[in-house]
Structures are given as C-alpha cells and as structure tokens.
Amino acid sequence: MEFKIKDAMLSLDIYAWIEENRDKIEGGFIKKIYQVGEKEFLIKIYKDSTRTLYVNLRGQIFFGERETPDTPSMFAMYLRKRFNNAKIIAVEQVNFDRIINLKTKDYELIFELFGGGNAIVTKEGIIERAYVEREWRHRTVMHGALYTPPLPKNNPINDRDKICEIIENSKKDLVRTLASEYNLGRYAEEVCFRANVNKNAKNVSGEECERLKNAMAELFNFDGCYIYDGFFSPIPMKSLGKEIEHYESFNDCLNKYFAPQEETKIENIKLKNIKEMQLAKIEEFRKEEELNKKIGDKIYEHFQEVEDIISKAKSGEIKRDGKNRIKVNFDGLEFYIFVNLSPGENASVYYDRAKKIREKIKGAKKAIEEIDEKIKKEKRAIKSKKRKRRTFWFEKYRWFISSENKLVIAGRDAKTNEEVVKKHLGDKDLYMHADIHGAPSVVIKTGGEEVGDATLQEAAQFAVSMSKAWNAGFGNLSAYWVYPSQVSKMGESGEYVARGAWVIHGKRNYIHKVALRLAVGWIKYENTDIVMCAPESALRARTSSYIIIEPGDIKKELGAKKIAEELKAPIDDILRILPPGKLKIIKKA
Image (cartoon, rainbow, N blue to C red; front, side):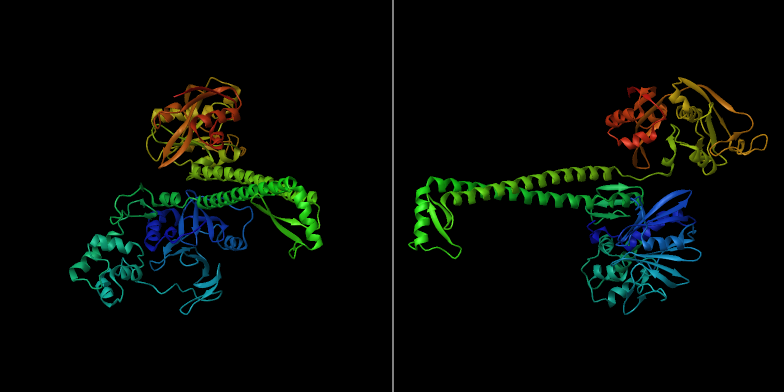
C-alpha cells in the first residue's frame, strides 16, 4: 500500500482511540499474534469475544480484520512465545506521543508509530528484542538497553497552563509552536481557529492565551469520528466546515478509512499504464510493418531499376556505405538496397521484417489480453475488499437479531453447540431447542431484560428451521425453552454426555406447531450492513425487502446463488447463513 503522512494517526487520534477502546483491551487475553506485512501486525485479543487489533507501525492502530499468513514470521513466532495467553493488564499512551504500551504481567509490548515505526519487547524496562534496532544521540533501542522513549513534549492535558510561557519563548509562529511543543500536529490549526487567534502570530495577549487554553481543552471532547476530504478526526473540525461522513465509533471510522484497497488500486493503475504502452507499441509496429511491406512491393515495382543500381554499385559507379548498402528513393519512399543481394532477395528482407513485426503485434495483443484479464481480477478484488466489513463475534455461529432486539445464537456443529452454552449462556439468558434429535443448541441473550413472546416464538422458529427437520421436509415442529440452571452435562444416571449434547432437567416450556420458514435480507447492525437469515418477523422489523424460504427441492448452493443475485450479496455470505438442506423460494417481500 502506498503510504502517505495523512494516513498516520496523530497523538490526539491515538489518545481518542485508546479512550474509546480501553475496556475492550484491558483484562483481555492475547490469543495469537500475526505479522501480515513488513510493518503490519494482528493481535487476537479475547475478552467476552475475540477481537483483532491491527497495528501498522507506520502510524495506525484499530480493531480490524486482515488476511492472516499461513506461516508466521520469525518475529511473530517470538512474540507468540512471550505473549500468547498473556493477560493485558493495561494499555497506555506514552507521554502523549505516538507510542502505545500493552502491559502484561511479565512483558511489555511497545509500538512506536512514528518515523519508520518499531515494535519493542521489554521486561522490567530492559529491551529484550526490537523489530528494528536503532541508536540516536539521546536514546538507544538495542537488546539489553533500558527502554527510553523520545524526550517528552508538553502534554495538552496537564501542561495547558504553560501555553503563554511556551509561546513567548518560541521562535516559531503560533501554529507551529502548538503543533511541535504539544504534539498536536494538524490539530494546532483547529485550536487557533476555535480560539479566534491568528495562527501566524508570534506573540499573543493574555486574553488570547486563555482562549487558546480553552480551545485546547475542547480537543478532548470526543464525538465518534468525522471524515473530511482526505482527513479524519475524533472531533468536529470547525476549521474545515461540513464533514463528509460521521461515525458514532472512532474505531469503525478508522477501519473504513484504512480499508486495504489502495494496493489493489495502485496495481490496477500500473496494469492500465502497461496496457497503454502495449497499445502504443502495436500502433508503432503496424506502421513499421506497413512500411516494410510497402518497400518490398516498391522493389518489385522498380525491379529493373533496382537491378541496375546493384550492378553499378558492384562495378564502383555508385558509392555504397560502410554496411554495403545504397540509399534509394522511389516515388518519395526512401530505403536501403543491399548490394550483395538480388532485387528479389532485397524485397524478401523487407517482407521478412514485416512478418516478424506481425509476430510482435500478435505477442503484444496477447499481452494486452492477459493485462485485461488481470484488470478484471483486480476489479473483482477491489469489489471483494469493498465488501469486507467488520466481523462480529456471533457470526462464528448461526445467529439472528429478534424483532425485540435480542441476539439469538445457535451452534453449527458439535463443537459450536458446546461453545454457545459453555461460553455464552449467561445466568439471565434462555436456552431453546427443537423437539428433535439433531438440532442446534440455541441461546437467547437477554441482556438481563425480560424476553417477550415475539422473541421466544422467533427463537423457536429458528431452532426448528436450523435442525435436521428442514432437510427432512417437515412443515412444522415443536420447540421448548428452559433456564440456564436446567442445562447440564450430567445425565440422571450420572453419566457425562457427548460433546455438543446437553441434558435438560426439570420442566420444559413448549411452543407447538412452529413453522419451518425463514427469511433472508440485508439489515444494518451497529452501522454495518450485514445479511441475516431469520424468522420473517425479525427481518420485517429491520427491512422491507427480504426473501422468504421454506424446505424444498432446490439444492442449497443453487438456492444461495439465486438469493445472492436477488439481494446483490456475496454468495459465500448467503451459503453460511442458510439452514442445512434443500429449499424453495416462496416470495420476495
């Protein structure tokens, strides 16, 4: 990816991101670390659910997915040995600089997101390993050295009262002083604008100082994320006017802003440039081919004259050049005659050249076809990357959001049947199951609130539809729900049941004659467009456009293709959420 300075997060951006996401990191466990690029890392952090922290040493940090390599780098393997399963005690920004410190019990993982960037592992303050070892006049980043960050600047939170003194002692104008002395970068102009003070001033009054202090304090009133033309910010930039987009979440904004599309676009541009060069070559080749063919024809038109010229050249009457050639001009067409060849052989030389050039044209055309195919692939890649979005933890399972806004999840197999209960069935949640062997465990996440009949009915319909009853072609089936305390691994005889299976104790609350019928459509969840398969009432609560399905005789793959085409959705996304087995499409709402 081509990287520009504007793509780097500044100190204020990092501060805002940490404040927004601290509770998602601290107390979480590092499950795995990947190196996905020269200076790009992914850290899988588990706390309630697994989130992926993306760190680009060139100046980016946020929760966002990237493709992981099959083989870990040596540095990633080292990081895994030190940090796998380690609990993150604290995440800190160092000295209001572009430095993030992930602290665990034994080690600290420090990311320096400035300059070329660096990743540093310390133990008790001593550097055990650095991604890049460096040495400056004021500090050293080497194995065995004490980790020392760059000399701290003034902190815009704690050192605002020094602002008048700092400005007075600075040789720079106001905006450059604020940018460098307070690590504000481009936000220095926003401070000047809000304070209504000339950014080019060298001296400011006491009253102006107070306004500057207040304006600096306002920088920390974070409000999601604002995107301007080539610019993002956790605050509304009054100096820039109306924003292009606004996001409730700073992280969601960064994830979209830094979506990995640039590399593909750049590659696409390169391919188009190569194609243009090939087209230009073909045009030159055609002209050259035409010229050589024309010369061959012209030699035959003036066959006797050419023969006379060759004869005179051999006798010395006409002077030849150092390459044993004579330049001639017939009817305004200038070319060389080779003295050691007959007129017919001379014509053949030019015809052969034309033939070779035709082969070059064929090669160039073939190259263009290959380029066109690559461009098509790149366009498909761009579309694919554009479809990439935030992945929610519950998508690992079967899931839907009820019409009463309750998350319902279900297992896909024995392993996830085990997980949804062990990991996600809380004390205040409910457990649902179809009244048939071969059905998933379904968990209704209540959020501690009472669950209405609508959610119970929808969860029952989801439970029966995602069971083997769908593939068997059932029209309806019963389901039941119980409390978490009734779900156990121990049978009446004390025997432990198989993986993915659960024993229900006590009274079951049945819901009878539940139809096997679902709907598929786009919904918006936490500002993200996502395809959901759920009971119709759950879809209807979120969208007016969806497709209704029932058990049928259309193969799942073919049905998924038709639904994907209708909804303009990725077929893989549709396949993943459909019930197990054949289906029929009833209608489009």
